[in-house]
Length: 301
Image 1 (tube, rainbow, N blue to C red):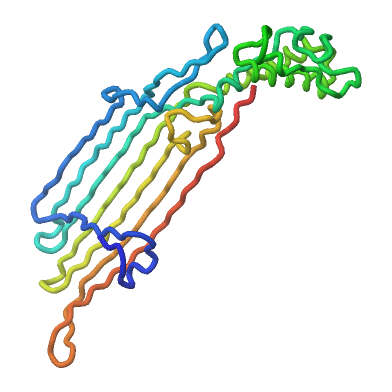
Image 2 (image 1 turned 120 degrees about the vertical axis):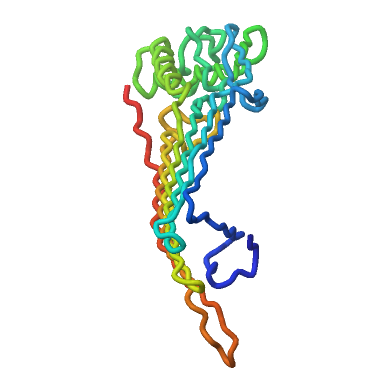
C-alpha cells in the first residue's frame, strides 16, 4: 500500500494506493470455491433502529426494530494451461447478493400523524365561535394556547393545533363550505401520505467476471492480459439505512457498470552503459465506467 510520494503511474491518485497481485493459471488444473453467509436473524437488536407508532390515547412510542438483512457472497476461481509451460489461463467469478428491505417512516411522527379536531368548538377559538377565521375573514381564529394549557389541553396538543390550522387553511384556499369539510379533506390527504410509509423491497446484486491470460514468452519475457468486469444493480438502493424518512417510492435506484482491460509485459533486458542490464516493464489499461441513479417511478393513486 502506498500513502504518499507516488510514482508517475499513480499520478491521478488522491488517497492511498493499494496494489494487488492476481492469480494466474499453471500447468495443472486448479481452482477454489467459496461461500459466505451473513444473516441479521443471528444478530442482536440495534437500539438506535426504532419504529414509532401511535397509541390509542394519541401518544407515541418507539419500539426496537430489526429489519431483514441477508448477505450471500459466493464464487470460484479456476486456472490451467493452454500450452504447457507457455500459455496459461485463469478465470474468477464473484457474486454478492443482499436482501435488505427498508422502511419508510415519518421524520417527526408526532407532527406527521397529528389530525385536526373532529369538530371546531368555541373552546379552541379566539372569539368563542366555531369559525376558522375572525370577523375580518383573514385572521386565524384558532386559539393555539387552549390546545396545550388548562383544562382543554390535549395530548400532543401543539401538533393538533397545527393540524387544525391546516384544515382551516384548506377551507380558505379551496373555498370549502365549512370546517368539517376542511378537516375531512385534511384527513384524506393525511391518509394518502400514510400510504407512502411502510416496507420498501430493496436488494443489491454485484457480479464480477475476471478472465486472465499469461504468456511466458521465454525465460526473460512475460506478457499477460486481464479483464475485470463488474455490474452492480440495486433497486431502491440509494437510501441504504434500515429506516428512512423518504416515501416508499423515493428511495432511488442504483446502477453501476465498470469494465477494465489491462495488458502487461516485461520485455527483454536491455544493456545500459557500460554493461549493466536493465529490466523494463510495460503496462497500460483501458476502462469503461458508468454509474446511474435514475428516479424511482412515483406512485399514482
